[in-house]
Image (tube, rainbow, N blue to C red):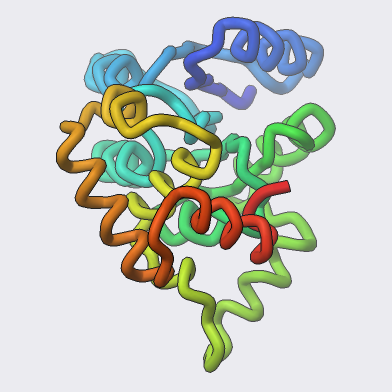
Length: 212
């Protein structure tokens, strides 16, 4: 029996995932958490045990790569399947480098979830064909990298939040950071992308197909 732990801040998503997994005789949901602080606290319990953790990367508070890194530091052998609103060609490689065992865009999670969990449990890694091709290109020398590829994980995360229309104060609240810190990150992002404002940032994201 494969023990699965679900982390997502939306109850309706957690219930949907549990319903899918409940139909599989070899899978069982052994726990759930609604945010980063919640899952880190539950992992400290002596009776915590799971084979595969399904982790939403877009939650309020500590989330994204930082949370993934903390989880792997606490439980190095833990297999983590990342769920994200971002297409895999935009964010997946960073999560794999941070220790994730697989990556699913939420748009395709329903079709691939069970297969991904079983693959991770048996072979330790789940890669779609697209993601496998990305990894092959990633290990080859890159001579013409784009400016956004030079952003740090946190800068990339904040860039996506800015492009989605979120205000600085809301981003600060979601990430548990000060408003001045978010302004500093925004300045760094603008400098690296050689842009001056949010309008140009959105335009940059569109022409580089970072958003639909």
